[in-house]
Image 1 (cartoon, rainbow, N blue to C red):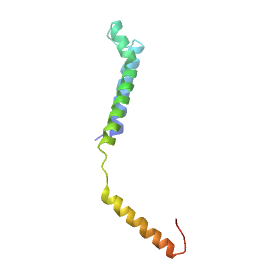
Image 2: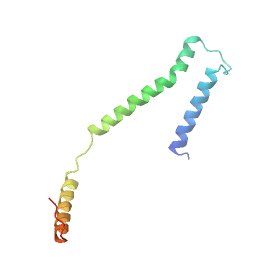
Image 3: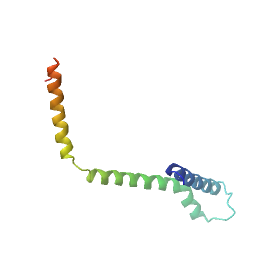
Length: 94
């Protein structure tokens, strides 16, 4: 089984080899000019698509972020206990 990194690197390697071979006209097939333009610009399209997907994912995750009220209350209690413990040891916290 391959790790996710290996999967991504192999896909990038395959795409890069196809792109470079088409860029240097080493493919055994002839491509029309519109197809060549699409292939040459495809890295930019992929970057734009990746950026949009990343922004959408971050926005979605921020929108559904859960509030942890129980953990917040527990943390506040621990802070109060720590302040009391430090005051007993002679440290004054305002």
